[in-house]
Length: 370
Image (cartoon, rainbow, N blue to C red; front, side):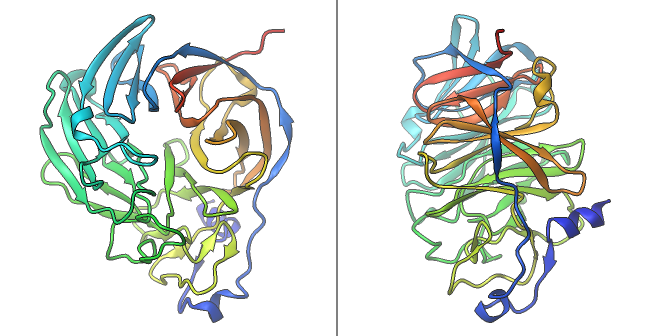
């Protein structure tokens, strides 16, 4: 089955990857919007936050939602009560794409209180550090990466099924990857990277060829990674990649390709295998920047069973699609529900969808009322 997945999603071994070799490369068909759907509604559950960029649950804390604000605070929200767990605002540089960008809870958080943050420091560089619940100071730093520009910092932190901590980093900013970092396997920019969190950090490249991965999600049931990678001027893409750590890092194509569109003058590193996106959408109708999501596994919204949910920051549009057994995607539907300035799609402790809006609100997906 995995061989079929690689075949259908056009994972291709390439050698010698300049313009001449890529000009006639066959592109697979990718899933595009097929129509509209009304599978759920959204209701506001919290307001007055400062540019939240993450919302979800913490292991062992089923009654609360946790949120991370771009300005540097971590909040615990239970009903009408809000607790500022960490105020890191004096350490965080905030900009359009800078700030506190990611949070991940250790799988054993309920017992050990360990969690991890990714933020932009005073110089605009990427920092990742470990914290302990109740302590305002970091336990230790795990990563420092210099950022050449203010944009394309990526942001997502998450624990993978192998127990390592994963971070998605953008290409360092500027237009069309001017420093060619995404295709340079000697740099961490433009990559999905991972490290163990016990012992000394040892960051390794897992995927290459990323422009600005704004949210990724592991599907442990199928051993896959879903990624929303922000495009340049025309195309936003969703990638679905087999989680195969015994193989060389696969390549998602940027900056040789935007979606499946060839960008002249940009070479493709031949050290990995090229993986095409499974779904794309173009700018227009207010769309500008994809926000990756999750495969729904809750019980309250049966119409969404095992469908991948994602959206767009500018338009607030939400889409769902069905993954195919071969590793592709089909039946893309734009939902009637929208979330303005959509920055994150997460789940609560029951697996139900929650959304963060950069306008300062948190939302929950709820069944439609007849």
